[in-house]
Image (cartoon, rainbow, N blue to C red; front, side, top):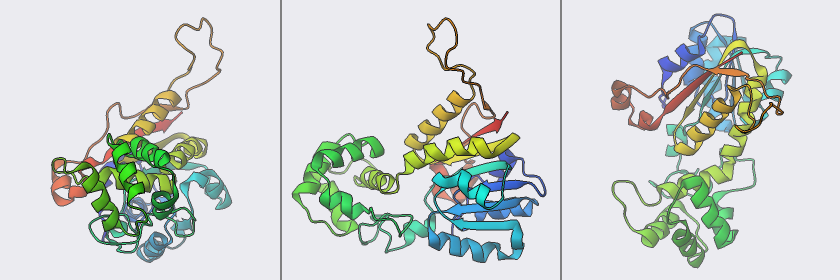
Length: 300
């Protein structure tokens, strides 16, 4: 296995994995977390939008037979996939929202500016929208919005102007060079880092699909079951934190409302008040884990 699953022990502990119970790995990747669940006796439904990841996971998990079900689809369809596979209700759902080392290292995927590649960035090669489409056809104002909202890029306007002025752009190194020239070097972080993050999120509709999937996860988890989410940047973590906050409260009416009119009832209780972070030992062995943050909730 080339990709090291982050917060592995912490994830298994958070899910409270028990023999013969059902668990969903919404981002199965190469099967690292799924393997740990299976080794603890659980049954796994693994989902991934990347067909290559599913192929690798299939090879890595084949020894577990029908205890592992793998589906090439987007976790935005989580509830329908579980019902179709008769994998319902479940005792735990895990989201590991990080990019895999294999995806980052694939020269043809375009996720990284460390090597030259087409401007692709799709998890699912079957979808139409690519980074190339955004970079070369979207209006300057829309590109700036994407960089600002999904990359939290303060110089989104300058970068968008530079991208439009230098079109057409056909490769990752071309794009990285244009961004670097537009805003210059800022400390240790490569100037194109936020731009690449923003484009990837936009191409794959990551935040919208995560929001939809979290709601569906609540629907399929049985009482006492756990939901664990590992995020890697502030946008994801903020979304998860807010979802957990809202779903752990009985009433969402404004403070000055005399009587509850929303009718909302809590569906979860928070297991982690603060995020779980990788240990210094894990970070030393896997530097890419350093930005991982896990939040855990329990269905009530």
